[in-house]
Image (cartoon, rainbow, N blue to C red):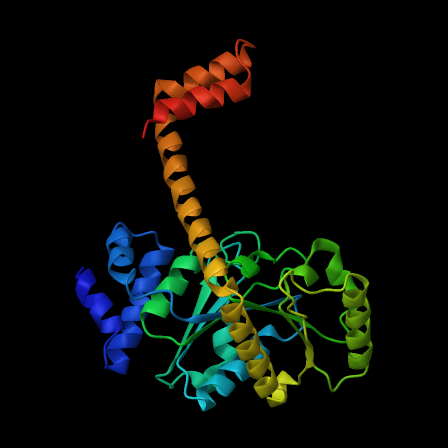
Length: 320
């Protein structure tokens, strides 16, 4: 495999070569291919420039339809767009449903849009474990904006906030109590609220309930960002321009208050930590066939050592 050629094609002028190269690079990420270290080394100087927008919310609120409308709005502005749509994994094949590609057919032939569905593969938090490095590939390939749509898993999908510059939390009328989302902190990760399907009865009630909840805690960041509430009808493209304008305003605010660099450094720290932990797990896994882990387990089982002391001894034995 000619990794340098793939990376060059991902940044090249040929739309066909670029699309194929980006797809292959993301496949290497998902498969944890041995060439991945070389790929990331070559991408490092080029990555990190895209504006990253996260979309989260309960199933049925219209995340995929909203993503589709935002892609169209950004394309009208002349921006190149990448989409990482994380779908639930099949319990049988382990693959993703690819439902987002079904909904985004109108962008399928647009060379300025790259859409990739990724299977969550059981990863909690609404994202695929490979999402941070797939994001790096899209950014290095020249995408101005990357939209990350999470799995609709309800109140636990807050991990996207650590990956995005701006996080949209979507709600919709008729989906039960809109404030139910506050239970597990999904409201707290929002930089912008979008009440989709606003042409339905109850949309104003959801907006009112959100405003009430935000007023209880005077919901704003320490630096003064007050979280806006927007309405949209994504199926008709209504409200998409207003959402994009608010995302742009939030991006400018992040830049002005030094928060953009802070968020991106934290994102890099999380990525480095995840890779380091994966390496450590691999080393511990290698010990399963040797005497180190077996000896530690025997001591704990016999009551000769507590698990913390045994773990410390095991980590010390890993070296490096």
